[in-house]
Length: 116
Image (cartoon, rainbow, N blue to C red; front, side, top):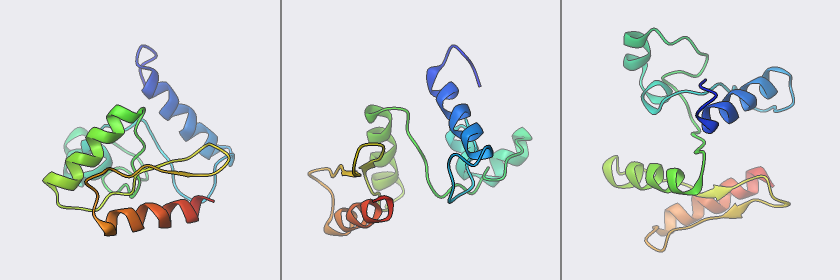
């Protein structure tokens, strides 16, 4: 966590809220760099200790631009499906891309149902 980087402060706050059971339903930790969130090899090399390091199922982006970059990278480089949603409003918001497949749009709808 670096106080000069607001996204890391936010990630640490979310992690602490999970420790206090203010957020439930999953194992939450952060901040983690992308490689440490998804690569067990990276966590081993860097000595990162976290209950989710190397095996994160959900990645939270600090803003719309970062989330879009992450989603497009996963979609086009890894040929994986992404579900673009915004949570925290009265109801979850589906955030599809015009180029999303029908499957990706269905995943976004399903994720919103889970969060609703």
